[in-house]
Length: 257
Image 1 (spheres, rainbow, N blue to C red):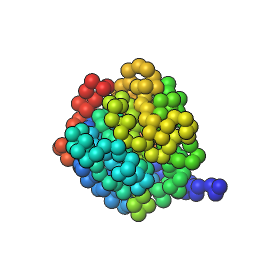
Image 2: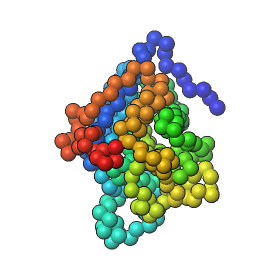
Image 3: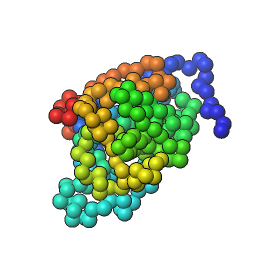
Image 4: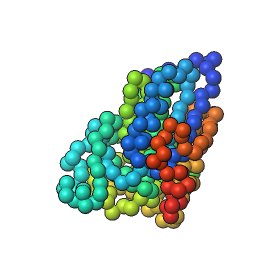
């Protein structure tokens, strides 16, 4: 395997900017992400913006997913108040709900000297390390992307690259209502086939104890900054470009924090 190119020694230390956004409607997130991707294209020094948020209930389908992975009829989807959105990202179907933490790094790959594969390994390593901070053992696979625990798939991974800027990211099941996940097949299958293709897990099931969203966010901020080799890290609540439809980070946690 060819080593990744290194950043020039004279480059400034990269900065990671983490934005805690609370609960954000998906359209509002897409608008913000598109603007951040555009802005990242004009950077001359390496820097990353990571959006951390929850979404209201919906299903998104990436390039590896299909309608066949969703085992509800259209009438049943309407009864569940679930919209389905086809998204130009990697990965398959993701069922979003409060209690799931979406992690969206906006990364100018060229300024960091990273390949797409190298970036994905860093993203997954940061998530695994974050889970370890919470006392949860997890694993990845050489054959596919995602992070698994004893209870099943804990974090789905699906990214896109636009003009050299990585976006979208990972979806961490902290403590969402798990009933619905039985109707959306997890893609791709887990490293251990005995767990079942549609086996979904969450951090609550792994720990068998209360898991606070605030604690998960704090752990991932620390470990992702390290995985991305960003010694300088800034943490903010909200974003000035985000629609007012978003709920504050504290409010979004509710009883799930």
